[in-house]
Image 1 (cartoon, rainbow, N blue to C red):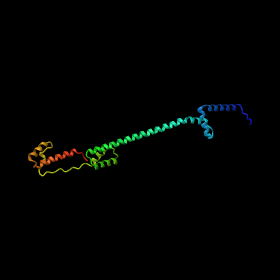
Image 2 (image 1 turned 45 degrees about the horizontal axis):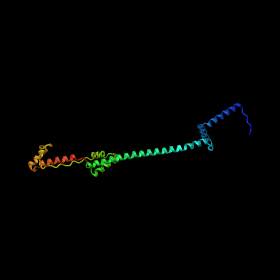
Image 3 (image 1 turned 180 degrees about the vertical axis):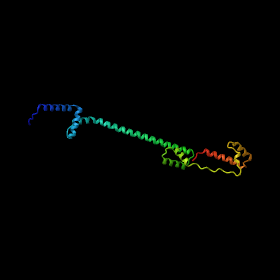
Image 4 (image 1 turned 120 degrees about the horizontal axis):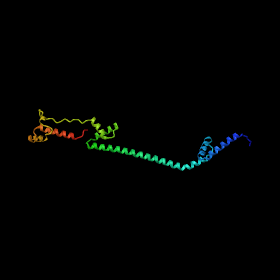
Length: 198
């Protein structure tokens, strides 16, 4: 090997560089970083500290991955449960609304019309859709039975004299059409007012 002579300043500089490199290699964290840098420059460089750190971290990394997978599964399960609860609540609201409409006397055709409105307008509550349906399809006024007389017989009978109507009916033995017509009109009005509009 050839002998190389250097001056004292160069020797001191090289000695300082050697000491600095030695300090870096003996420090655990700096040594890993130095091995990482060496691996970037030369992929074939041996990295015993990095390899040992990876082996030591492997079980922890495995546990961390399992915990992350469990968290993801729990989050998905909670989201699904919340979604299912919302869907069940909406279905219950729909079923209760349809049942309420049936109790009010709605026909199957009327309920189908309400369901069509719900779908078209994105309405969740059948009662709200029924209100829209009733607004757009008011009930037709049924013609009242007429009287056989040519005079205005209604002026003599008021709305709150039902006892008087019955007395007149008994007195006339049902032979005066104006009294029977008036009683029939009142009965029809009462029935119509007690029924919901469709």
